[in-house]
Amino acid sequence: MVGPFALPEADPEMATYAIGDVQGCYSELRSLLREFGFDARSDRLWFAGDLVNRGPSSLEVLRFVADLGDRARTVLGNHDLHLVASARGVRRLRDKDTFHDVLDAADGEMLIDWLRDRPILHHDPERAFVMVHAGIPPAWTIDEAVIRGTELSRALRAPDHARLLSNMYGNKPDRWRKSLTGFDRLRYITNAFTRMRYCHGDGRLDFSETRPPGDQDASLTPWYMLRDSATDGTRIVFGHWATLQVRAALARTLHVRHLDTGCVWGGSLTALRLEDDREFSVHCKGGTPPSHR
Image (tube, rainbow, N blue to C red; front, side, top):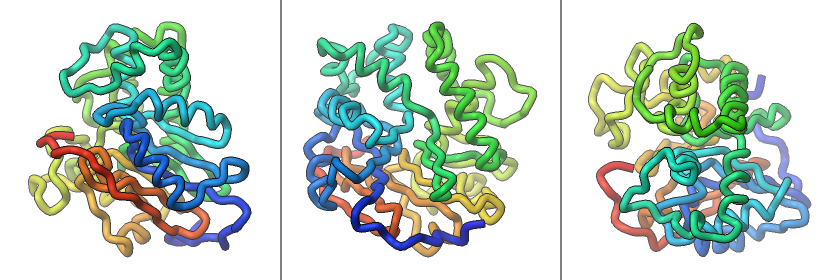
């Protein structure tokens, strides 16, 4: 078992950087890569989902990450899925969506297929890291989460994936049961990995509360506080929750690292170097945060 963020010595010749929600902020992404001296010949990038939307340059972000090939690992976030669903005609565009550049591009369909082919969860057992967009619900061990992620990814890559996308939206079921089947099962898995923030004490997911911990309804607890992290021995890297701030000491105890620092809202874009737990960040222009993210 790996202790709380027990880290190997960094290899100066090669490094892996996990990056939080980019959301179409291409110029800030390039600034962040310059900040930590990204070397495309040897370094690797992990992206914690939501490459697109709300920011001005979703197309440039997708092209850049796709061109990295095996040098990048990306998991799907809720905004990424919204782009795919919109491209398939099963989700109506919203006024605040900013990925029209992807939909209108000559290579847009190819990029959307590339995005749809990304996993829901990335597991690196040698490093004892797992990356997801929103989190892993208390009901699942890491091994179970890997299985559920594979299950959903397989459905998203299937020829009839549009049926899944059209049945993907909704807040129910909010409790995991092994007996769940069909779209109810896949909807729960999707919500857990891409939308979750809080849970009720009995493990039910809640999607009504978006305020940061300390301001939430007293009946709700951040998902990571309800996990038995000591039994997993695996560090969870996630994004999605721009208002969340997890104290470093608590994060190490809980085996989690949160990387969405609100770039698209005028915060920062953050990367974590996995080899030595060092963070890098750049300030972002962004805009005014809405009441819901």
